[in-house]
Length: 252
Image (cartoon, rainbow, N blue to C red; front, side):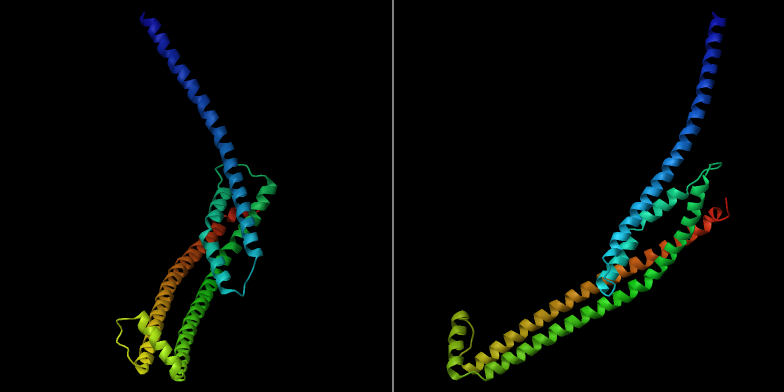
């Protein structure tokens, strides 16, 4: 009975050892295939990202500061595809075999990554310059609208001064009907009241315009800061990637 149990134990150990060895061989094969899948996924991601960039830049409006600014920001926000694709393509394990044609492509891709890194550094002045242009354009629009409203009030005041007594009396009756509690009894009081109302409306509009402009300026500063930092970090990453992939440029 004891011999039978020892025989069963020995058989179980041998079976587990064989299973472990077999499992190890399978794992190595799976790891090799998985590496190829990782590389293939990197190539696909990189191709789709470059295709998206091509369509994005095809509708170029370089002289439009809003388009140039938002496009540069889009390139920074969507840099993840390039980062992930680059990581997956250049991921290699020890003793991996690389075909000569793929090795040459990796060498080309290494230099291409350097160009991308430099491009992201060059994006920073584009972001800064167009952000300043957008700010100045918005500031000019606010000033123009405020000046236009002030001019309209001046024209309105002149029209009231040049109105005939009959026109002023008609305005007075209409004003008293709409504002029964208002203490406006004469046409002179009417002109003062109408001009004050117009000025109050203009001040409210001016305050609203300035508030909106200040909010837009804060949003512009936030997005500009975020995109500048993102562009610099992305540029550093791609330059370092070019440096760490020097093995592709040594020669096959």
